[in-house]
Length: 173
Image (cartoon, rainbow, N blue to C red; front, side, top):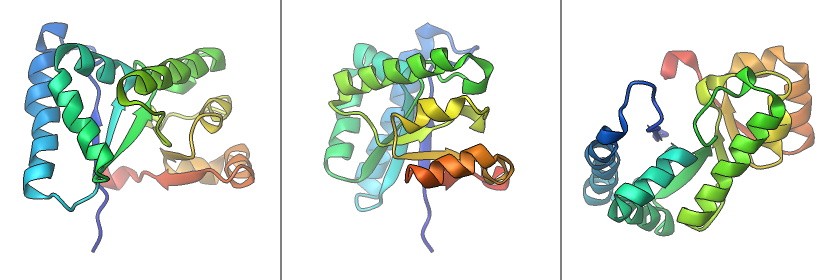
């Protein structure tokens, strides 16, 4: 049986004080990279992070960022992006969502050297105006199957632009 592992990283939680960022980076993200490299060197995984998280990792723990870059370079890790501060996109005007994605992609390019192909849609939030922001930047996105089934515009758009969708099931996450 094959499994997909997506490790989710977001330092921009409401109750995580900035003085704890390095602790989280070292005891969660670095531990993930080290564990995968040392114990599962041939197992592929996905590491998803907001632009803010990658920026803080670069500023506070550049050695940990190098471990992520090494895993990406050797092909064991695929990096999946999300908006800069990991907002629920439907809660904001489309322009703000587009800006959050672009700003995040600029951060990824600056610190990782590329823009990711995959997108993590925070909390699987959806509204019709989210689509254009995602389609213009990514090849793969994730959201709930029920959203696709109930949103004809979504279904029509992702079929017409050849965007691949990874469905996230509530019972599995």
